[in-house]
Amino acid sequence: MDKKESPEYLGTSNLMNLPFNWSAGPYLGRWLTELRDNGKLWASRCPKCQRLLLPPRIICGICYVRAPEWPDWVKLSGKGKLIEWEKVESPQMNPSTGKIEPEPYIHGNILLDEGVTFQHYLEEPDMTKLAEGARVEMVLKPQHECKGLVTDILYFRLIDE
Image (cartoon, rainbow, N blue to C red; front, side, top):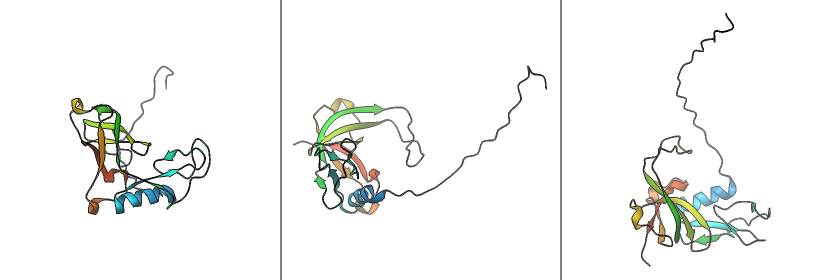
């Protein structure tokens, strides 16, 4: 082959389906079980800095101290204030499913009443109705549809209080 010629590379397109299961571990597993079975959010609290860890983690990422195990967690109300939000208008792949999420949708950052932040979808499709500090609450799927995933939380909706 002449040095000036580049080789022709042939390829084939194959869509691979590689299903797998991964362990959520004792902390995240318990958190997801509580969400699925009881519709409650929980956080662990670092015994050194007192920071809430949501979802609960074994080790505080700031202090490197072991957090308490269940049942010594803090029950969260599922209510809080909207801090910020964004409208997602370009297709995004859900890393859990590999599927493209329907769009557009609004994603928010919520400061829960207990002082910890949580990010999730917002129900309100009209961004003009959203305001910093607006009160929101968690809305779950019907209990019989819950699977022990963070998507058991459908969205946060605006509330009047």
